[in-house]
Amino acid sequence: MFIEASARGRGKNAIIYSPLYRGLVEQCVQFYYHMNGRHIGTLNVYAQARGAGLASVWRAYGNQGDIWSVARLAIPKELARAGYQIAFEGITENGFQGDMAIDDVSVADGPCPVEQGIQTVQVQFNDTTTSLIDDGKNFARNIRKGRLARIFKKKGENNAEEKLVDKGQE
Image (cartoon, rainbow, N blue to C red; front, side, top):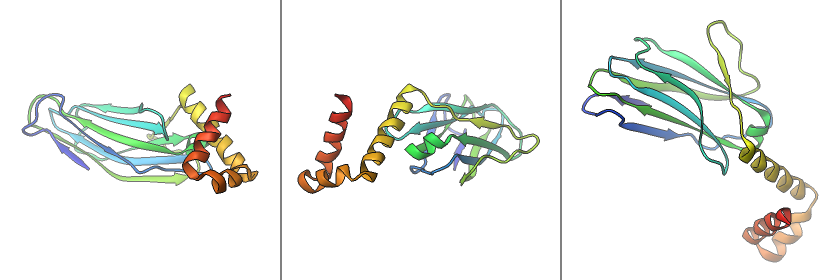
């Protein structure tokens, strides 16, 4: 994925969203980035739990040279189980010299590898995300216990979810 500074003014941006990722254990999101030129702006990376808002988790600014660098995000087990998305945003500065790109985005189960010169960023989640994770756990627990099977048969899938949420809020 690529954004070029040519013919753009300060603050023009491009953003791309990943699919929804899920896992049973902690995960490592790894990507390579290239930011070269005088008028490079900012590369922002956001994460969001399913149903929550975007939270900034990583950022690089300015000319990083004509090299590809690697970045890693450690996704905690709770967030992986709830489901999450990653968003990449490139923002340009004034001028036309420069481009930025990301490549080889990968998601792997388990902790991020430890290598000299590569710092892994621990993705944190807030109270809203914790609430969403708790709701997801309760929903899964009720499915395992067979509580929702009766509701699905009687009312249909959409009403079952609404009824579960209503019971959780009482």
